[in-house]
Image (tube, rainbow, N blue to C red; front, side):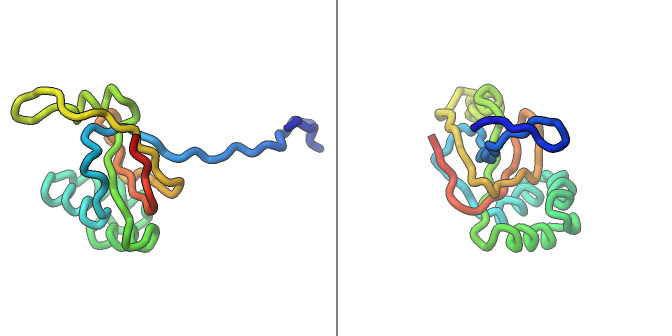
Length: 141
């Protein structure tokens, strides 16, 4: 499309940019996704990732408790909401998640995962990955 001159004198494009689906990388995609209302409690209670309560509560605008976060997830994405940790690039995915914990050997292929437009990050650990919550189908390649 052509650009046109606006009344204010600035050029504005008639073409609107389409929002991009979030995409990330993961090793070991054979397990797929899990229900978000199970993943978040597991991360906090079993793995001790207490920071998720604070981060998720800011994103979801709720109290920093598991019950409040699970309710906010269900209210926003429905009862079939999913959760998935993804890295921003292949190198980070391989470095942080591509090794057997006992042997240290590299394991699994790196998958590229494209998420639905409704996906949101509720915890960001930088190169260690981001925890996405979403509803709908993800695409693994």
